[in-house]
Length: 505
Ligand code: URA
Image 1 (tube, rainbow, N blue to C red):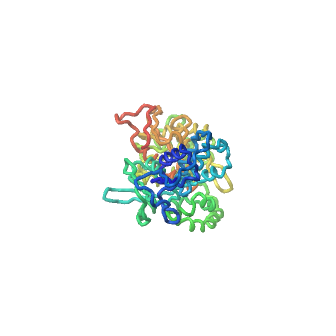
Image 2 (image 1 turned 90 degrees about the vertical axis):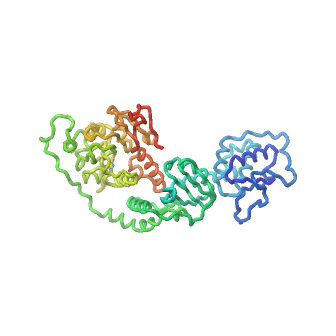
C-alpha cells in the first residue's frame, strides 16, 4: 500500500487513512507513507502519486488480513494528542511510526503500559521537539514595522525546525489581534489582517524586512537590562539556542556584553557602597499636623509620610517616596514600594523597573508624564547584604499601615482609574489578596470610591524572567497596559457593575 497525504500536517487526513488501513487489516510493514514533501535526497518519494488529493491506493497485491480473532483494543485519547504533535515533526518517518503505533496499540494491549517501548519513546521525543520549537517560535519571533500601500504591517522572519506554522498561528492572532502582521518562514507563511489568518507557501530569506527604528530601541533596552553579575552563558545558550541567533537582533550584543561582563562585575564589587543621602529634609515635627486628618495637599502628604513611623520601615529608608505626575491624571499607576534608586532619588520608578515601564509607556504613546506614578508602600524596605541593599517585600501589616497614605494620594490626585502593578498594589487598591496571573488584563469594579482598577504584572517580574522568556512576557504585558488605557466604562458611559469585566482584546 502506498499512502500519500497532500498536506504534510493534515492530521484528519492521516486519521481517515489510518483508520481505513486498520479496518482492512493492513499491517504497518505493508504501508509506505508519503506526505508530498521533498525527501532529504531531494526526490519526492512518490512522484507519481495521484494529483488532487489524498489517496489511498494500492498497486500491489492485497495485504494479508489481520490475524483471525485478534481483538482490537480502543486507542487511548492521549495517543491522538501525541499524534497532533508528532505529525508536525520534520522526520519523513513520522507517519509510518504513527501508523505502527496505532496498529500496535490496537493489537498489543500491553503497549500502553510500557514506558520503555522504543516506538513510544521515539514518538515522545518527536512530540517534545515539536513543542519546544513551538515555544521557541513564540519567544523568538521579532516583528519589524513595514509601511506599505495598505498602511502599517508588522513582518517577521523565522526559521522553525518543524512544520509548526499553522499550529502556532492562532497563538499569534490572539496575542497580536490588533496588529496586521505576517510571519515568513522558508516553508510556510502566515498573515493576519485583523480578521482572519491566511497561509501561503514559504518565502525567501530576501523577503525579510530591514530593521526598523523599534529594533534600535529594543537593542538599547537589551543592553541596559543586561546584568553582568548574573551572566550564565551555558544556560543562556540552552534557553536561546545558537541556531536562532542569526534572526535575533540582540544576539549580536551577547558576545561583546559577555566579554565585558567579568570586568564590569569586578568594578561593581570594587565600587564603594552608595551612601544613602537625605535628599529632601524632613519638615520639622512641629509643622506636621498633630491629628491624623488626611493631608490637604501633596506637599503635606510628602512631609507626613516622610515622618511616618507607623511601621518600622520608615526608620531605615532615606526618605519617603510619594508619587509624581499631573493632578487629575486619567490614570494612576501604582507600584509596590520604592527601590534602592528611588529611595536615594526621592522619586518613584527611576531604577531598572521604572526604565522598563517608561519604555512600555513610550511604545504605547503614553509618555510617563501623562500619568501619575505612585507606590502602595512609601518607604524602601531592604536587607543589607554586604554593601548592597536588597529589596524586601513589605509584610502585610506594613503595607496595611501605609494604605491610608495611598488613599490620601488618590483623593488628592483624583485619577479617573487605577492601574495596579503587581500583587502588593492590587491588594492595596482592592483590599483583598489578588492572584495577578488570574486577574490580570481586566477592569475590576470593586472599590467603594467607584474607581475602576486594572491589574497587571509589576515590571520587575519581567526583569526577573530568564532572557528567553522575557520577550514574550513583555509583549503580553504591553497588551495588558494597552487595555489599561482603554475605557473602563461600558458603552453607556456609566461604570459597569462589579461583575462585568472588560477583557483586553
Ligand atoms: N518598584 C516599585 O514598585 N516602585 C518604584 O518606584 C520602583 C520600583
